[in-house]
Amino acid sequence: PLILGIESSCDETGVGLVRGCELLSDHVASSVDEHARFGGVVPEVASRAHLEAMTPTLRRALDDAGVKLADVDAIAVTAGPGLAGALLVGISAAKAYALALGKPLYGVNHLVGHVAVDQLEHGPLPKPVVALLVSGGHTSLLLVRDVATDVMMLGDTVDDAAGEAYDKVARLLDLPYPGGPPIDRAARDGDPTAIRFPRGKWGDGTYDFSFSGLKTAVARWVEDSERDGRALSVPDIAAAFQESVVDVLTRKAVDACGEHGVGTLVISGGVAANSRLRGLAEQRCAEAGVELRVPRPRLCTDNGAMIAALGAEVVAAGLPPATLDLASDTSLPVSQVLAG
Ligand code: ATP
Ligand code: MG
Ligand code: FE
Image (cartoon, rainbow, N blue to C red; front, side, top):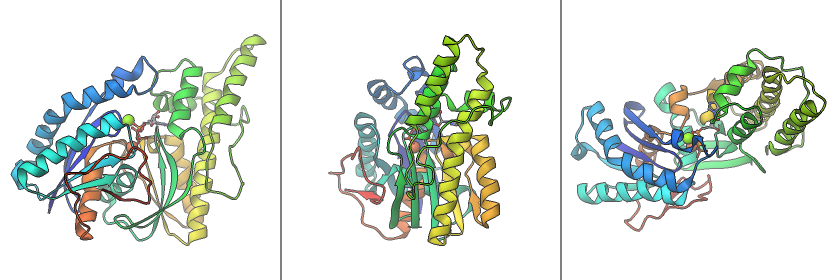
């Protein structure tokens, strides 16, 4: 079946088309530039941008795949978690198309979509996998026995998300928003052992994460340096900060694979684009005999293809479609793959 996926949970309007594990098209319109001067996503700005981008993005996705709207067999849309106003735009569009075409509608979990998308790059997901989801809004470790029906949260951040920490630290260092890419670049010229920043929740026996103490430690380091008139090495701070983040992320992810006897780790979300995270994960997975799957950066950030990929799995599992009462759930738990 041909599945249309619509994503609008945050600042990306995404429309994708898939058939099983085959990616036919994927178009994303981002409002990230409009949020840059605020240093974070402004919900009202995001909603308006979704409204303007939805129809043109859908057109492009259909053209690119060489299919017509009437060819679509089912429609999947992000039902949550995300920003209420932003989700509403995607859900309303999806309902309109489902109603007009007389095709089934599925409200799916955005976070699980980040895992399902790997199928478009590396083929069917083994069962089970452990998934490390690292983005601007989320930092979670999941045990995924079946992407359509059996997803369990192993751990979560207790404060900031990993990407949020990158964005906040970039601000402290006068680097642009979003902060991940410039910190990643700066860190390449730095010494990760130059400063020893704290590793939040290291060895605490949980799969939870914490990054706010790290952010505070970087802020204090910057203040102290300025007060004492010491020159700041942005590359060293970036490298040391980044090492602290990816050390904990990869350690806990590989430990979770070991504890649950899982042979595959999937890393997804915007922070999965990070070069040091990829490098250290490769090294630690190889040491532990775990297969590592990281989709290409374009599929790791928010997009419609990931929602279509999850939709394809939900359809294949024979799960019931939503009704036109489908509502957004801003805090949809990850264990709930389908909303409504
Ligand atoms: P959600 O959390 O709902 O998935 P989001 O838009 O916040 O939505 P993404 O678009 O997946 O998340 O990712 C954006 C985040 O990824 C930003 O915080 C950004 O700084 C971070 N990021 C992007 N590239 C890199 C990189 N190379 N290294 C580290 N972080 C990165
Ligand atoms: Mg984004
Ligand atoms: Fe996301």
